[in-house]
Image (cartoon, rainbow, N blue to C red; front, side, top):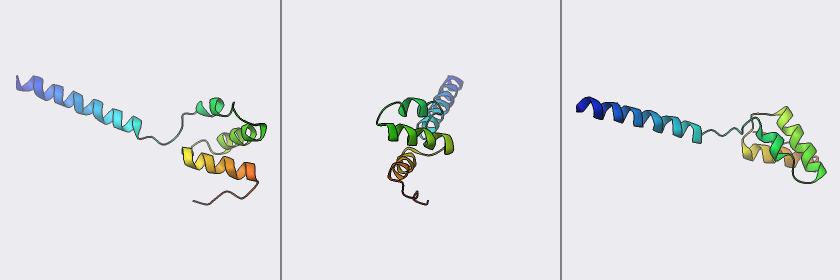
Length: 79
């Protein structure tokens, strides 16, 4: 009986860890750029595609800053 409980607990703990690791990722999926950049004005689409091409590992907020900087023709914020 104790073996079953320990096995079940270990399995549940492993699943919880895997779930939390997958939820905690801040990088977008590689294919997301193609979908996200299909909508919006022409300038946005161009800047969006450029951002995903040059900086594929940006978080969502950094991606938005990068696209805004491209559209406004201002230097990107450092950080």
